[in-house]
Length: 154
Image 1 (cartoon, rainbow, N blue to C red):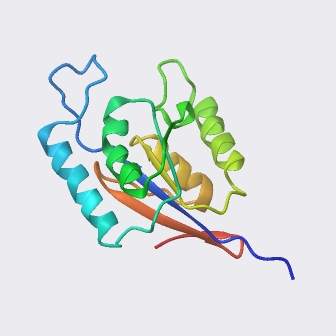
Image 2: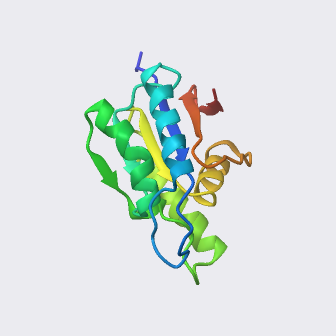
Image 3: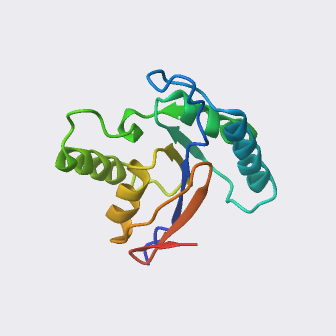
């Protein structure tokens, strides 16, 4: 009997960003750094599953949010352009296809993936996986498990 695929994806929305100059790729605000510390505590306390692969949008606020978790796991952090927010001039259809393609490319990998991204990408990805729209707050993580052909939120 073939072994069935069981995997987890942990979606992490970047923590609160420094908004002093919204035209810049700012890092985290002090509130965002507190949110990141809380995420790390949840990871260390086992409230979030151990991660194998850590991928992030190229935006500085995303990198600064997920980097402490990848360091704690002893894993490299992969900068993934597909996880970047919807670009100016990128249609809804092209945006959705980009997210769909990324998810399909990583579908068969059984390792636990942490994906740090934005408030437009994550709901689109969750909708692609589950058919349900799910919102996520800044600095929060949502854990999804794939088993028996279905994704469920834990």
